[in-house]
Length: 316
Image (cartoon, rainbow, N blue to C red; front, top):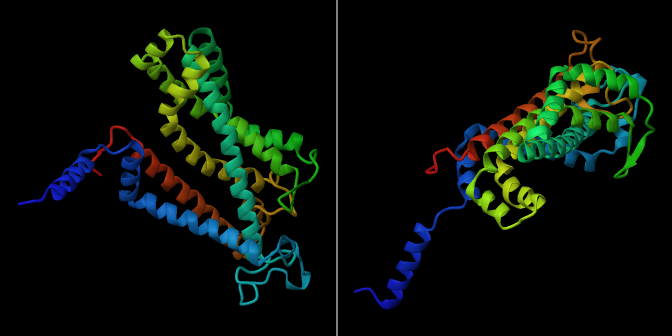
Protein backbone atom coordinates (compact mmCIF):
# COMPACT_ATOMS: atom_id res chain seq x y z
CA UNK A 1 0.00 0.00 0.00
CA UNK A 2 1.20 3.52 -0.77
CA UNK A 3 2.15 5.65 2.18
CA UNK A 4 0.52 8.98 2.85
CA UNK A 5 3.63 10.87 1.61
CA UNK A 6 3.63 8.90 -1.67
CA UNK A 7 -0.05 9.65 -2.12
CA UNK A 8 0.57 13.37 -1.64
CA UNK A 9 3.43 13.30 -4.18
CA UNK A 10 1.31 11.45 -6.72
CA UNK A 11 -1.49 13.96 -6.21
CA UNK A 12 0.93 16.84 -6.72
CA UNK A 13 2.27 15.27 -9.92
CA UNK A 14 -1.26 14.73 -11.19
CA UNK A 15 -2.06 18.37 -10.47
CA UNK A 16 1.04 19.47 -12.36
CA UNK A 17 0.05 17.35 -15.36
CA UNK A 18 -3.49 18.72 -15.41
CA UNK A 19 -2.34 22.34 -15.02
CA UNK A 20 -2.86 24.05 -18.40
CA UNK A 21 0.18 25.32 -20.27
CA UNK A 22 0.59 29.03 -20.82
CA UNK A 23 0.32 30.49 -24.30
CA UNK A 24 4.07 31.08 -24.44
CA UNK A 25 4.90 27.47 -23.46
CA UNK A 26 2.62 26.17 -26.16
CA UNK A 27 4.15 28.59 -28.68
CA UNK A 28 7.70 27.56 -27.71
CA UNK A 29 6.82 23.88 -28.12
CA UNK A 30 5.28 24.51 -31.53
CA UNK A 31 8.29 26.55 -32.58
CA UNK A 32 10.72 23.78 -31.61
CA UNK A 33 8.75 21.34 -33.75
CA UNK A 34 9.01 23.67 -36.77
CA UNK A 35 12.17 22.41 -38.50
CA UNK A 36 12.67 25.28 -40.92
CA UNK A 37 12.14 27.81 -38.13
CA UNK A 38 14.79 26.12 -36.00
CA UNK A 39 17.13 26.02 -39.00
CA UNK A 40 16.53 29.73 -39.56
CA UNK A 41 17.21 30.46 -35.88
CA UNK A 42 20.54 28.61 -35.95
CA UNK A 43 21.51 30.34 -39.22
CA UNK A 44 20.68 33.74 -37.77
CA UNK A 45 22.62 33.05 -34.58
CA UNK A 46 25.61 31.95 -36.69
CA UNK A 47 25.51 35.16 -38.76
CA UNK A 48 25.25 37.32 -35.63
CA UNK A 49 28.21 35.49 -34.06
CA UNK A 50 30.16 36.00 -37.29
CA UNK A 51 29.78 39.77 -37.27
CA UNK A 52 30.13 40.14 -33.47
CA UNK A 53 33.16 37.91 -32.93
CA UNK A 54 34.77 39.21 -36.11
CA UNK A 55 34.64 42.78 -34.78
CA UNK A 56 36.75 41.69 -31.80
CA UNK A 57 39.36 40.16 -34.11
CA UNK A 58 39.49 42.96 -36.70
CA UNK A 59 39.07 46.70 -36.24
CA UNK A 60 37.10 49.06 -38.45
CA UNK A 61 40.41 50.56 -39.57
CA UNK A 62 41.28 47.12 -40.95
CA UNK A 63 38.00 47.12 -42.86
CA UNK A 64 38.77 50.50 -44.46
CA UNK A 65 42.50 49.94 -44.97
CA UNK A 66 43.36 49.90 -48.67
CA UNK A 67 46.47 48.67 -50.44
CA UNK A 68 46.24 49.30 -54.16
CA UNK A 69 49.04 46.81 -54.81
CA UNK A 70 46.62 44.10 -53.59
CA UNK A 71 43.56 45.26 -55.55
CA UNK A 72 41.20 42.62 -57.03
CA UNK A 73 43.09 39.71 -55.50
CA UNK A 74 41.11 36.44 -55.61
CA UNK A 75 40.44 34.50 -52.39
CA UNK A 76 43.67 33.27 -50.80
CA UNK A 77 45.13 32.38 -47.40
CA UNK A 78 45.96 36.04 -46.76
CA UNK A 79 42.51 37.26 -47.91
CA UNK A 80 39.98 34.39 -47.64
CA UNK A 81 37.25 36.40 -49.42
CA UNK A 82 39.65 38.26 -51.73
CA UNK A 83 40.12 42.03 -52.02
CA UNK A 84 38.09 44.78 -53.66
CA UNK A 85 38.90 47.40 -56.26
CA UNK A 86 41.19 49.42 -53.95
CA UNK A 87 42.72 46.51 -52.07
CA UNK A 88 40.43 46.30 -49.02
CA UNK A 89 39.86 42.89 -47.43
CA UNK A 90 36.34 41.70 -48.30
CA UNK A 91 36.04 39.33 -45.33
CA UNK A 92 36.58 42.16 -42.85
CA UNK A 93 34.25 44.44 -44.77
CA UNK A 94 31.49 41.81 -44.73
CA UNK A 95 31.82 41.74 -40.93
CA UNK A 96 31.39 45.49 -40.51
CA UNK A 97 28.97 45.72 -43.43
CA UNK A 98 26.80 43.08 -41.76
CA UNK A 99 26.68 45.16 -38.60
CA UNK A 100 25.40 48.14 -40.57
CA UNK A 101 22.85 46.10 -42.53
CA UNK A 102 21.46 44.40 -39.41
CA UNK A 103 21.46 47.67 -37.46
CA UNK A 104 19.48 49.35 -40.23
CA UNK A 105 17.06 46.41 -40.29
CA UNK A 106 16.46 46.46 -36.53
CA UNK A 107 16.17 50.24 -36.16
CA UNK A 108 13.88 50.56 -39.19
CA UNK A 109 11.75 47.77 -37.73
CA UNK A 110 11.43 49.75 -34.46
CA UNK A 111 10.16 52.76 -36.43
CA UNK A 112 7.78 50.51 -38.35
CA UNK A 113 6.38 48.84 -35.22
CA UNK A 114 5.89 52.13 -33.36
CA UNK A 115 4.17 53.91 -36.24
CA UNK A 116 2.16 50.90 -37.43
CA UNK A 117 0.96 49.97 -33.95
CA UNK A 118 0.09 53.58 -33.07
CA UNK A 119 -1.89 54.24 -36.26
CA UNK A 120 -3.60 50.84 -36.23
CA UNK A 121 -4.52 51.07 -32.53
CA UNK A 122 -6.01 54.56 -32.80
CA UNK A 123 -7.90 53.75 -36.01
CA UNK A 124 -9.24 50.44 -34.73
CA UNK A 125 -10.22 51.61 -31.25
CA UNK A 126 -11.85 54.95 -32.01
CA UNK A 127 -13.27 54.08 -35.45
CA UNK A 128 -15.55 56.51 -37.26
CA UNK A 129 -13.98 59.62 -38.76
CA UNK A 130 -10.59 58.97 -37.14
CA UNK A 131 -10.47 55.50 -38.66
CA UNK A 132 -11.53 56.78 -42.10
CA UNK A 133 -8.85 59.52 -42.17
CA UNK A 134 -6.02 57.29 -40.96
CA UNK A 135 -6.91 54.47 -43.34
CA UNK A 136 -7.11 56.83 -46.33
CA UNK A 137 -3.62 58.10 -45.47
CA UNK A 138 -2.44 54.50 -45.17
CA UNK A 139 -3.94 53.55 -48.53
CA UNK A 140 -2.38 56.61 -50.17
CA UNK A 141 1.08 55.57 -48.94
CA UNK A 142 0.51 51.97 -50.03
CA UNK A 143 -0.39 53.12 -53.55
CA UNK A 144 3.04 54.74 -54.03
CA UNK A 145 5.88 52.30 -54.82
CA UNK A 146 8.15 52.05 -51.78
CA UNK A 147 11.36 51.87 -53.79
CA UNK A 148 10.42 55.05 -55.68
CA UNK A 149 9.92 56.95 -52.42
CA UNK A 150 13.20 55.65 -51.00
CA UNK A 151 15.17 56.56 -54.12
CA UNK A 152 13.71 60.06 -54.37
CA UNK A 153 14.16 60.88 -50.68
CA UNK A 154 17.66 59.38 -50.55
CA UNK A 155 18.61 61.51 -53.57
CA UNK A 156 17.17 64.69 -52.01
CA UNK A 157 18.58 64.18 -48.52
CA UNK A 158 21.82 62.35 -49.28
CA UNK A 159 24.98 64.09 -48.09
CA UNK A 160 23.14 66.64 -45.94
CA UNK A 161 23.68 64.88 -42.62
CA UNK A 162 27.25 64.83 -41.24
CA UNK A 163 28.98 61.66 -40.08
CA UNK A 164 27.93 60.34 -36.67
CA UNK A 165 30.17 58.80 -33.98
CA UNK A 166 28.37 56.04 -32.08
CA UNK A 167 29.65 53.10 -30.02
CA UNK A 168 33.20 54.03 -30.93
CA UNK A 169 32.46 53.88 -34.67
CA UNK A 170 32.07 56.50 -37.35
CA UNK A 171 28.84 56.19 -39.34
CA UNK A 172 28.01 58.14 -42.46
CA UNK A 173 24.94 60.37 -42.11
CA UNK A 174 23.28 58.35 -44.86
CA UNK A 175 22.71 55.54 -42.34
CA UNK A 176 20.32 57.77 -40.37
CA UNK A 177 18.49 58.77 -43.55
CA UNK A 178 18.05 55.16 -44.64
CA UNK A 179 16.76 54.05 -41.23
CA UNK A 180 14.19 56.86 -41.04
CA UNK A 181 13.06 56.51 -44.65
CA UNK A 182 12.55 52.75 -44.47
CA UNK A 183 10.86 53.02 -41.07
CA UNK A 184 8.34 55.69 -42.05
CA UNK A 185 7.43 54.04 -45.36
CA UNK A 186 6.96 50.41 -44.24
CA UNK A 187 4.41 50.65 -41.41
CA UNK A 188 1.22 50.42 -43.48
CA UNK A 189 0.81 46.63 -43.47
CA UNK A 190 1.29 46.41 -39.71
CA UNK A 191 -1.16 49.28 -39.18
CA UNK A 192 -3.91 47.38 -41.00
CA UNK A 193 -3.14 44.18 -39.07
CA UNK A 194 -3.30 45.99 -35.71
CA UNK A 195 -6.47 47.85 -36.75
CA UNK A 196 -8.22 44.58 -37.62
CA UNK A 197 -7.25 43.09 -34.24
CA UNK A 198 -8.47 46.16 -32.35
CA UNK A 199 -11.78 46.20 -34.24
CA UNK A 200 -12.53 42.65 -33.12
CA UNK A 201 -11.11 42.88 -29.59
CA UNK A 202 -12.79 46.14 -28.59
CA UNK A 203 -16.20 44.46 -28.81
CA UNK A 204 -15.22 41.63 -26.45
CA UNK A 205 -16.99 41.38 -23.10
CA UNK A 206 -13.93 42.18 -20.98
CA UNK A 207 -13.40 45.43 -22.91
CA UNK A 208 -17.06 46.39 -22.57
CA UNK A 209 -16.79 45.69 -18.82
CA UNK A 210 -13.65 47.83 -18.55
CA UNK A 211 -15.47 50.73 -20.21
CA UNK A 212 -18.47 50.25 -17.94
CA UNK A 213 -16.39 50.72 -14.79
CA UNK A 214 -14.83 53.90 -16.17
CA UNK A 215 -11.39 52.66 -17.21
CA UNK A 216 -9.64 55.36 -19.29
CA UNK A 217 -9.27 54.68 -23.00
CA UNK A 218 -5.47 54.79 -22.90
CA UNK A 219 -5.44 52.16 -20.16
CA UNK A 220 -7.82 49.90 -22.11
CA UNK A 221 -5.61 50.19 -25.18
CA UNK A 222 -2.30 49.59 -23.40
CA UNK A 223 -3.30 47.11 -20.69
CA UNK A 224 -6.16 45.12 -22.22
CA UNK A 225 -6.17 45.18 -26.03
CA UNK A 226 -2.53 45.66 -27.01
CA UNK A 227 -1.22 42.60 -25.08
CA UNK A 228 -3.72 40.47 -27.00
CA UNK A 229 -2.33 41.83 -30.28
CA UNK A 230 1.31 41.10 -29.50
CA UNK A 231 1.49 37.90 -31.60
CA UNK A 232 0.87 39.49 -35.05
CA UNK A 233 3.06 42.45 -34.06
CA UNK A 234 5.95 40.11 -33.23
CA UNK A 235 5.61 38.28 -36.55
CA UNK A 236 5.40 41.53 -38.52
CA UNK A 237 8.41 42.92 -36.66
CA UNK A 238 10.51 39.86 -37.47
CA UNK A 239 9.64 39.97 -41.16
CA UNK A 240 10.11 43.75 -41.14
CA UNK A 241 13.80 43.33 -40.30
CA UNK A 242 14.33 41.21 -43.43
CA UNK A 243 12.35 43.65 -45.56
CA UNK A 244 14.40 46.62 -44.27
CA UNK A 245 17.70 44.85 -44.99
CA UNK A 246 16.57 44.19 -48.56
CA UNK A 247 15.35 47.77 -48.98
CA UNK A 248 18.75 49.08 -47.86
CA UNK A 249 20.43 46.74 -50.33
CA UNK A 250 18.19 48.01 -53.16
CA UNK A 251 18.93 51.68 -52.70
CA UNK A 252 22.61 51.08 -51.89
CA UNK A 253 22.90 49.09 -55.12
CA UNK A 254 21.73 52.22 -56.96
CA UNK A 255 24.40 54.26 -55.16
CA UNK A 256 21.95 56.22 -52.98
CA UNK A 257 22.17 54.25 -49.75
CA UNK A 258 24.94 53.92 -47.19
CA UNK A 259 27.93 55.85 -48.50
CA UNK A 260 31.59 54.75 -48.36
CA UNK A 261 33.78 54.34 -46.46
CA UNK A 262 31.01 52.91 -44.24
CA UNK A 263 30.44 49.39 -45.51
CA UNK A 264 27.11 47.61 -45.90
CA UNK A 265 26.27 44.49 -47.83
CA UNK A 266 24.23 46.64 -50.20
CA UNK A 267 26.97 49.09 -51.16
CA UNK A 268 29.47 46.23 -51.42
CA UNK A 269 27.21 44.75 -54.10
CA UNK A 270 27.02 48.14 -55.76
CA UNK A 271 30.81 48.29 -55.91
CA UNK A 272 30.88 44.93 -57.68
CA UNK A 273 28.41 45.68 -60.48
CA UNK A 274 31.19 46.31 -63.01
CA UNK A 275 33.04 43.11 -62.16
CA UNK A 276 30.26 40.51 -62.30
CA UNK A 277 32.22 38.28 -64.69
CA UNK A 278 35.84 39.15 -63.94
CA UNK A 279 35.86 39.26 -60.12
CA UNK A 280 32.94 37.19 -58.87
CA UNK A 281 34.18 37.20 -55.27
CA UNK A 282 33.31 40.90 -55.01
CA UNK A 283 29.58 40.15 -55.06
CA UNK A 284 29.44 36.47 -54.12
CA UNK A 285 30.30 36.71 -50.41
CA UNK A 286 28.25 39.79 -49.43
CA UNK A 287 25.40 38.51 -51.60
CA UNK A 288 25.55 35.08 -49.95
CA UNK A 289 25.48 36.59 -46.46
CA UNK A 290 22.58 38.84 -47.46
CA UNK A 291 20.59 35.90 -48.85
CA UNK A 292 21.27 33.71 -45.80
CA UNK A 293 20.33 36.52 -43.40
CA UNK A 294 17.04 37.36 -45.10
CA UNK A 295 16.21 33.68 -45.54
CA UNK A 296 16.89 32.88 -41.88
CA UNK A 297 14.80 35.84 -40.66
CA UNK A 298 11.93 34.78 -42.92
CA UNK A 299 12.15 31.22 -41.56
CA UNK A 300 12.04 32.58 -38.00
CA UNK A 301 9.06 34.78 -38.89
CA UNK A 302 7.18 31.85 -40.45
CA UNK A 303 7.87 29.78 -37.34
CA UNK A 304 6.61 32.53 -35.05
CA UNK A 305 3.47 32.94 -37.16
CA UNK A 306 2.65 29.23 -36.86
CA UNK A 307 3.66 29.00 -33.20
CA UNK A 308 1.57 31.99 -32.12
CA UNK A 309 -1.50 31.01 -34.16
CA UNK A 310 -4.28 30.43 -31.56
CA UNK A 311 -6.01 28.04 -33.97
CA UNK A 312 -2.95 25.82 -34.19
CA UNK A 313 -2.69 22.32 -32.77
CA UNK A 314 -2.04 22.71 -29.03
CA UNK A 315 -0.83 19.11 -28.81
CA UNK A 316 2.40 20.00 -30.62
